[in-house]
Each structure stands twice: as structure tokens, then as C-alpha cells.
Amino acid sequence: MSQPQFEEGTTLDRFILESRMAHPGATGVYVNLIKGIELAGKMISSRVNKAGLAGMLGAVGNVNVQGEEQQKLDVYANNVFISSLEHRGAACMIVSEESDGVVRVGEQWHSGRYVVTVDPLDGSSNIDVNATIGTIFGIYRRLSEEGTPAQDSDVLRPGYEMVSAGYIIYGAGTMLVLASDGVVNGFTLDPAVGEFFLSHPDIQVPNDKVMYSINDAYAQAWQPGVKSFIEEMQKPERKASARYIGSLVADFHRNLLKGGVFLYPATAKNPEGKLRLLYEAFPLGYIIEAAGGAATNGRKRILDLTPDALHARTPLVIGSKALVAEATELMSQDPALA
Ligand code: AHG
Ligand code: MN
Ligand code: MN
Image 1: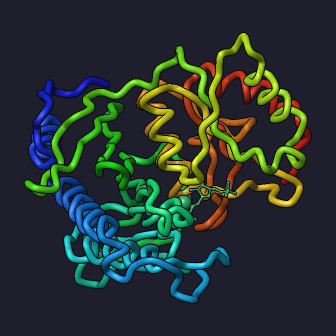
Image 2: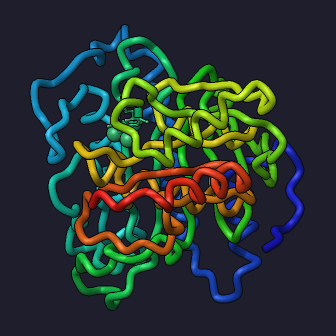
């Protein structure tokens, strides 16, 4: 799908307002929702940039619903994200990695039209070393009637039903990448001005670079198809490079801009893989397809899957179309583990 022409330097606010005007009948609710996410991104970015000075390094001493140790910034980012959306009358329900069940927003906001899924802080293990981390989000339009409490069935749906998705990356600079109307645009935060400006219009994932990202410490646990793919990548004639930092959002972002493939496969110990469908694989799958790439679980298109639980996991192969196809072809012959 195409979008109205926007020149670089357009603010995110102007971009979402003017893109929505192209939708007949748009009421401004979606614009309000993205503004809430934008605000959360600015607040988290500011805190990430001074984490070491603001007493925000280290763990809080709790584990989340997945049994993972929560970092102070995980908890901060989750609270900021929820409070920025709760008061805007746009979201009726939030599913977050750091909250046990769904967060149903207060009764006064039951009119909210959208369900938001979020990994408030992806790459938590990189917080204390000042390496790139991010926030990943996906948006569904609710199925249940506005004005009533949202239902789990509003979110336990295939990824292709999302209406938009994005992430905010806190690296050397802060960027918000948004996929909507089938187009992916990147906005860079100017911290002095406090605004996101369009810096990467209509992102398309390159197909000519061979970059692969996988945690090869688990190589002995890989299935034959994954092993064959990585061996293929390591042949000198492929001229490939490997990059893996352990923040999905950072590895994904680099591969989106430069071209490459990220894999987090299933193993006998983790037959469903590690990454979560609703707030990691679906949003990034939605973005990569809009950028001309692909995402699978090693067999099927990610966006065709339906989660059976809020925190359901999936193996993930995501990136440039040709590399994802090559990996999936080999992996689809492996026996299913789950
Ligand atoms: P989170 O910080 O949200 O829990 O996600 C961590 C994820 C993901 O960002 C990353 O790609 C992966 O964990 C790394 O896992 P390994 O250390 O097993 O490679
Ligand atoms: Mn994550
Ligand atoms: Mn997280």
C-alpha cells in the first residue's frame, strides 16, 4: 500500500495526523493511541539515558510471569507504558510481558477501541552494560463491542489481524519505527527538541547482504535443518557476517536496515523457542513483511499463527525474504518438537 508523500523532517505527530486523514471516517482515536505510545517512548528513552545516574540499574528482586528476573527498568518501562495508554480512551486492554494477565483499563475507558501488546523493555540483560535495548508493540482493533470490558478473545488472534506495529529502540540515538498501512517508517528523536522526526521513510529490507544472527552457544542443541543453514552461511563464497547482541530488537533493527536474518529456533529443552508471539514475534513479523521481508517459525508464516495463551512462545526466523526462505526450507524437514 502507498502513503501520502512525507519529506524527511516531518514530525511523528504530523505524520500520524495526516496519514489518518487519508482514512475516511477516522475519528482520531488511533492518533491518540500512537501519541500515548510516543510519550511512553520519550519517557523511557530519557530514563534509559540516565539509568546509571538515576539508580535504575540492577534487578528488583522479583520474577515475572515467565519466571525471568525483572530489572528495575523493566518495571519502570511497564508502568510508564500502561499509564500513558490508560488515560487516553484509546486502549481497552494491554498485554505486557511484565504483567501476569491482561491489563484491562479502567471502566471509564471501556470505550477504548484498541488492544495493545507490549514488551516494555526488550534486551533486559543489556541494560547494565549500556547496550541497545528497546520497546516492541503491536496493535489490534478490538472485536468486542466498544463500551464493554475487553475479552481475552480480543487478543488471542492471528498476527495478520494487527492494524499496526512498531518498536522504539534506545541505542546511540532513540528511534521509533512504525509499520502502518503496509509501509514502514523510522523516526529519530531529537532529544533537544523532544520530538520524533521522520528520518527513514519507506524502509525496505535489503536482499543483497548476508548477515545472520543466532546464539551459537546452543549449536549442539540445534536441529539438523538449523545446523545445515548456519553451515551454509559459513561457506566463504556466501561472504556472510554474524552479528548477535542478545537484544532481539537491536539485532532485528540492524538486519532490517542492512539486510540479514535472525533465528531463535526451538530446541529439545525449549520446544517452543524463547520469544513470545504476541509482543515480540507478531509485531516484528508485521514490520518485516511491510518492509518486503518475511518471518516464519521454521515451517509456517508467523502472522498466520494463533496464540493459545497470552504469553505463548514461538521459534522465530525473521529478516530478508530470500534468507528466511532458505532457512525455512531446511528447517521444515526437521521433526516437530512441540
Ligand atoms: P527480554 O529482555 O524482553 O526478556 O527478551 C530477551 C530476549 C531477546 O531480546 C533476545 O534476542 C533473547 O532474549 C536472547 O536470548 P539468549 O540469551 O538465549 O540468546
Ligand atoms: Mn523481549
Ligand atoms: Mn522484555
